[in-house]
Length: 406
Image 1: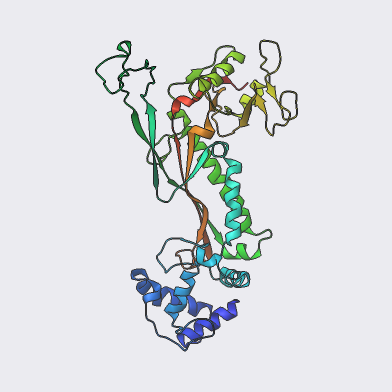
Image 2 (image 1 turned 60 degrees about the vertical axis):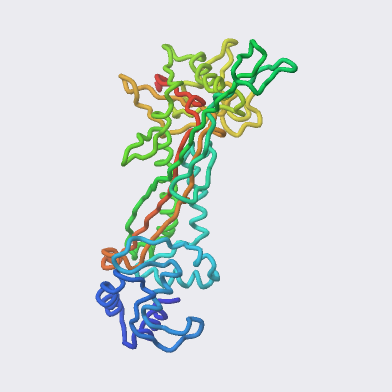
């Protein structure tokens, strides 16, 4: 749909000769009050004879309702709205393209569904922690798992003993009763958002397209913000996710002076003590910590850090430290200690004991009718993700502070 076709459609719906200023006035004055109180499709502003493929009536309210049904916007006074809804994804490709091009110059910009999917896959590129965890789909803002924390004990029972009674101990040949300890693991999805306002002239004239540039920036910004929350989140109102710094209590270790191989071994095996069947124990560190790890040697004088392809790291797609995967994460604090020259290392059974709740992946929203952007010929992009983070057992994780960065 071109701009001229859009104007012709509006003229048909209203029975008036319209230009760009008249359209703006019509939207701002005639619809602002009516559509802020009720649904656009329920407002009766007059009907015209049916047009091919567009139903039995063509009042202006019906047209605006169709715009909303396709996910292109809401009435004045509304907040931003999703632009890649299920209804739009069902449109024929050529129609989706028309809708996108036709409304760009009027203040709206359609983000196609396949572009949103591309950004979803990019989020993991900027979050080292998220890529390690088990992802749990969520249908509401919170999901709860029942857990068993222990309390059961197995006993050997002599032949022909009465196991129904609980009045005797094992020495008398009877099996004591065990009590299981049950609990709950709750994951709450929090909203993480980025807002950018762009002029429509820039959207129309930029090469490469500003929308494509924003897609990658949204993915990087949201991914790094979530990674930072998983590491250092405080669990407060404005920082709602509790990160590893706050959650790891049992195995909060400090490096010796000088920092050596024994410190790293202690970090890794504190995890294995509580997760003996873990497939691996990934180690996360800042690039400055990686430099220190590259200098460490084991008791036989061999370097414990291996790049992919080196001996004892053949077939590995990432570096290893003493056989465990190493992931560099620039979001880990590297200015700790009295001299601001220390960082931390994290290790854990992430695959089995760390959970990322995914209520909503990265979604980009916009609105062709929102003020004040419409009056200033601008488009507002809002990128949102709803994610949560939780550990099933903090003892299966360890944190080593005092790692030198110099």
